Length: 189
Image 1 (spheres, rainbow, N blue to C red):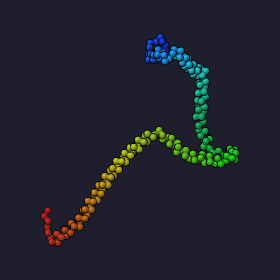
Image 2 (spheres, helix red, strand yellow):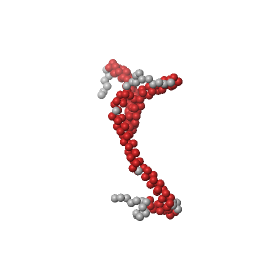
Image 3 (cartoon, one colour):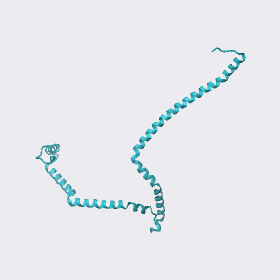
Image 4 (cartoon, rainbow, N blue to C red):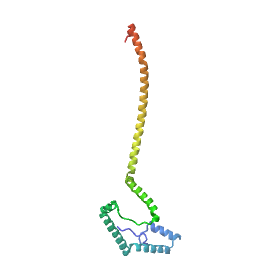
């Protein structure tokens, strides 16, 4: 079902038409201004949708597509060429720039050494939320383990105190037992 044209006064009134009607009635916008703006809009749209403009854009997109397809087909050979050292190939550089080239080469070597780390960081960006959730879970589990360890330490300290009390009572109990055996006193159960 085709929608009604909001600019066509013959169609039934809609929100856009009613609003424009109020603006024209209040004097904020004149009919002539509306017509000028409509003509400008038609001119701008005509430039964009003109067949020659569209054909030019289509041709540009097709050439880009063909180029990208060629790059993809040659991806392996390009990678091999990039990996292969460029031995015995000289780049003539004026003597004035030699010190800058030394610095530039140091920077390039440093960058290449760190490139794998940079790529790994970029690969991990989509997994950042998942890793943060895992870290939060691990932190919560660690908090639980710390609480359990503290409780266990308390229990060990209490047990140690009890053992000290028992070990301090053992010589006294042994002495009483020896005393009772010496005089053969029997203790009723």
